[in-house]
Length: 275
Image (tube, rainbow, N blue to C red; front, side, top):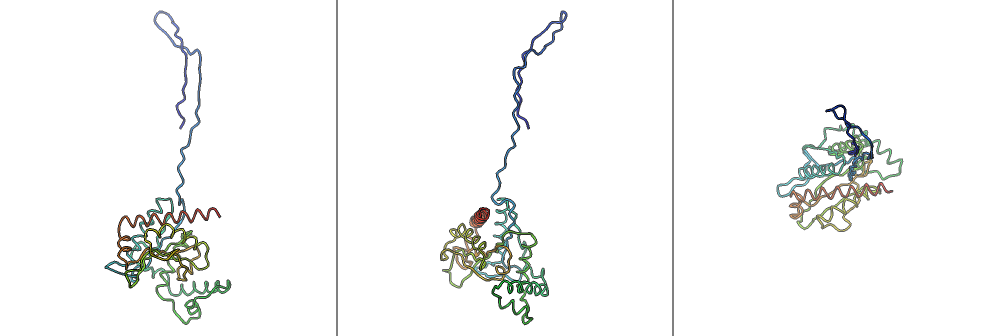
C-alpha cells in the first residue's frame, strides 16, 4: 500500500454574478510519492527442514519400565512435544508413530528379506562390514525377527517423506539408581551423524548431566546401520534414576528437552549450510 501522498493547492475564489463563487487552483506546490515498503518476515531457524522423529518402541514392544512408567509412553509424549517445538521453529516434523503401535504390520517378512538382500549386496560391494544377522537372513538360515519389521517401517517413513535427518527418541535403564544422564548414539562411519549427535548433545546434555564426556558414542543398532540419512538415537535420560525420571515427566523438563533438541538441530543445519 502506498503511504499518504501530501498535495498542497493554493486556491483563489472568483465571483460569478452576485451570489455564485468558484475556486480555481493557482499553484501546485508539491507532490511527493513515497514508494511502498514490503514488511519482511524473519526466516525461522528450521524453515522447511524435514525432520523425522521416532518415538522408540510401541505396542507389544514396551521398552524399559520403572516405577509404573513405560518407555514407549514416555518416548511418544516427549516426541510430540519436540515435534511441536520444531514446528514453531519453522521445521516440518514427521512422527513415525502417533499411537501405541510397534509398526510391525507395515512391512512383511518377505519384504524385509528382500530389503536385506539389497543392502547386503550394497555393503559387500562397498567393502563394509556385514552384520551377522543380515548374512543369515540373506543365506536363508534365519528369519528376520519381528522387531525388525517395525524398525524397517520407521526407515521407510523417513524415506517416503524425504527427511533430512532421523532422531529416534528413547529412555535408558540400569539396575542401579546411580546411572543417569543424556546419551546420544550416532552412525558408525558417518561424519554427518557425528556432527548431528555433537550438536544435539551440546544443548541437551547439560539438562541431565551424568554421562562421561562428550556424551556421544558410535553404535551399530539396526536403525543407525540401515539409515540412508544422518540418524541418531537420543537416550533422553535414565527411567531408573529418580532425578532423570522426574525431570522427563515434568512439563518444564519436557519443554526444556524440546527446546534443546531444536537448538541442536539448528546448530547442525547451520554447520551443514556453511560447508
